[in-house]
Length: 221
Image (cartoon, rainbow, N blue to C red):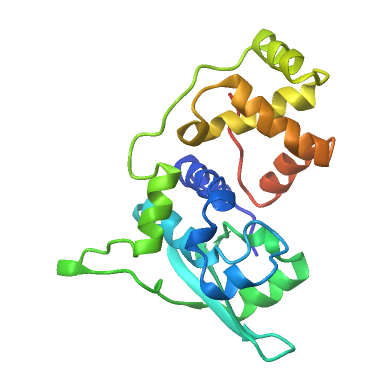
């Protein structure tokens, strides 16, 4: 798997789609709605990749998938995108280990996304991808917020009764990139950051390192 830097517009599309996973379980297939999922991204590979593809196709990205059977005989598929210079763009790669990803990518083959319509030769999103794109705010100008100030972050920390820290500030900046979902409210972003930091104190540092390791760069304002 080649490490690449993808266009900023595509990276932002991935971030916006991933932010919709927790509130979009209705878009999962029945197979995944019934099972216990280990990660928030599990089951979203097809609809997430298709949703991002409509932003990435003008850069020459193409879809790819791999199908395999688990040890108990149940069949699974995984979908991702590949750039013109053969770099992987996988919005749901975090559900697999590096070794599993190597095996999956090795058997992957080019293939269109199920459900895409092509009236008069023009591809249009499947119903699930259309809904995901609407929720992610894709296909329209993204909402931009003014950069968060240290003073505003400290006020939010005081209201939430949590200590202010550089990690807390990084969390607020990261969450505010999802302005189309939560608006430009510093307090709303702070509440999400607080929840993640209660799970792990270095959550956002690790998140940025993980994303950058895939060749992405998270924007923070």
